Amino acid sequence: MAARLEAWRFGSVLGIFLLIVGVLGWRLVDLQVIDNEFLRRQGDVRTIRVETIDAHRGVITDRYGEPLAVSTPVQTIWANPSEMDPAEPRLANLARLLDISEASLRERLKEYSGREFIFLRRKVQPELARQALALDIEGVYSRQEYRRYYPAGEVTAHVVGFTNIDERGQEGIELAYNEWLSGESGLKRVLKDNRGRIIKDLTLIRDASPGRDLALSIDLRLQYLAYRELKAVVAAHNARGGTLVMLDVDTGEVLAMVNQGSYNPNDRSQLAAENLRNKAITDLFEPGSTMKPITMAAALESGQYSVNSTIDTNPGYRSFGRFTIRDHRNYGVLDVTDIIVKSSNVGISKIATDLGGDVIRDMYDRLGIGQPTGIGFPGEAVGVLPAPPKWRPVEEATLAYGYGMSVNALQLAQAYMVIANGGVRYPLSLMKREEQPQGRRVLSEQITYKIRNMLRQVITRGTGTRAQPGFYSAGGKTGTVHLVGDQGYEDSQYKAIFAGMAPIDDPRLVTVVAVDAPQSGEYYGGEVAAPVFARVMSDALRLLNVKPELEVGDAKAKAASPTTGARG
Image 1 (cartoon, rainbow, N blue to C red):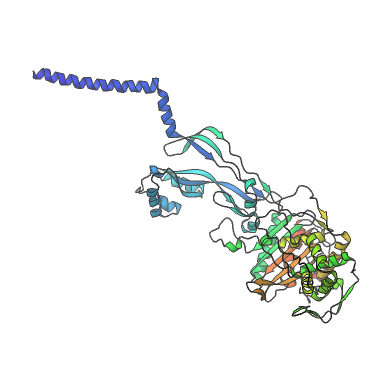
Image 2: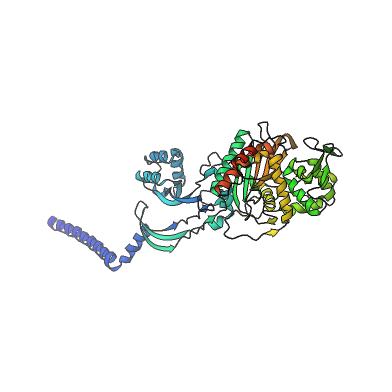
C-alpha cells in the first residue's frame, strides 16, 4: 500500500513537471516561431526611440566673412529619475564633477521620481560629458546640443547681441533676425542600448533645416580699432561712457559701431543691465554745436546768405528775457565761415532769427533728424525734432545750435553723411550691401561743397584742431552739451562730441564720437572727442588703402598747430 502511494506521488510530480515543461516549450515555440512579432515589438518599445535633431543656428559674419557669432556642438547631461536611486553613492562624484549641489541633486531625483527627464547640466564640453557617463550611474545620459560663441567678445557685443541657453535671440542682431538665423529641428528613430546611448540611426523622420547666415556691414578691423580708441579715451578721462559710429559715405553701411561700457557675451556671470544697450541707437542726446553746419546749409540754400555774408556778434552774448546765449568770448564781426570755425552761438542764433524755425527744422528733417534710421535694430530711439505751432525767438535760436531737440549718434552720422557725399541721403544698413542703394537728393552739391570747406577750416584753424587725422585731410564740427539728469541740466556734467568726415575733398568715411561726463578737467568736444576722431580716421583710411594726401612735413605741422579756441 505504501509502495503504491509513493509511486503515485512520484508519477504525479513527474506529470506536473512534464506538463510545465511542455507548456513552456509550447510558449517558446509560439513566441519564437509562430508569433515572433510580439517579441520584436516589445524589444523595439524598449530600445527604439524618437530623437530630436537640433538645427544649426546661422552664422553671423562681418562684411569679409570673419565670424562674429557661431554655434559649436556641446553636450547636455540629463537624467531619467524613474531609473535612478536617490541614495546612489556615486551621485556625490557626479555632483562634484558637474559643479552642482549634491543635496539638491538627490532632492530633485526624489521630487521628480515619476518623470523620465530632467536636466542636470546643459551645454558642457564633450570631455566633461564623457567623464560624467564614465561614472556608470544608471539613468544618467547625454545628448548633443549647440552653444553660441562670439569670437570678437565685447568688441561686437552691442551690435551682434546674444542668445539664451535655448539659442533664441535676446539682444541685438540675434534678436532682430532671430527667425532668419533659427533653423527647424528634425526628428529621427534611433536604436539605444540599456544606458540610453544611441548605437544606431534607424530612419530619418524629418531632416533638420539649418538657420540662414547673415553678413553684416561691419568691418571687424575698423570695429576693433574704434573699440580700442573709445575704451582708451573713456579710461583716460574717467568718463561715464562713450559711443562711436562710422559710416561708409557712398553706401550708408555701418562700418563700425561701439559703446562703452560693454560686456562679454561669452561670459555673462558679471553682466550689468546698463551695459546691454547699444547706446549709439537707443540713447538720445542734444547734439549741440554739431548742428551749426546744418543750420548754415539752410542759410545758404535760402539765398539770404552767401559765404561772404557777415554777422555782428557784439557784445558776445544775446538775451531772450531771462535766457542768455553766450559765446566763448566776444568775436565781433564774423563771416559765415568763421561762425562755424569759432562755433559762435550768437552768430548762428542771429541767422536762425532771420530764417525762422520752420526753415531750420525742414533742413534737419530732410537729413534724417527725428526719424527712424530704418536699420531695424531693436530699441531704436527716434529722437525729438520740435514743431511748435508758433516758434518763439529763443526756440529758433537754440534749435540752430542743437538744443531743445534730441538725436542718437547714428542719426547724427547720417546727417553728416549727406554733407559728405554731395547731398544724397542713403538708407542706412547694418547688413552688407551687394549693390549701390537708391538714394534721394536732399541738398545740392554746391551747398555741401561750401559746408565741407567750412568744416575743413574747423580742423585747420578752429575748435577742432586736435581732430587732424595724420596724413589725411578732414573736416568736422565739435560739440559740447550739458548732460540732462533727473533735475534737468547738470551744471558740471557734459557730453563731448565730434562729428566729421575724411578725406575732406572726396569723403570716404563719416565718424561721430561722443564721450559722456569726462572727469579729467577737459570736457569740450575739441579736447576729448576730436583726438579720438583723429586716431580712428587715420588708421581706418590706411586700412582701407586710401592714398595719403599730406606730406610728412604738412602732417607734422598740422599736428603741432596751436589748440587755442579748442572749444565747442
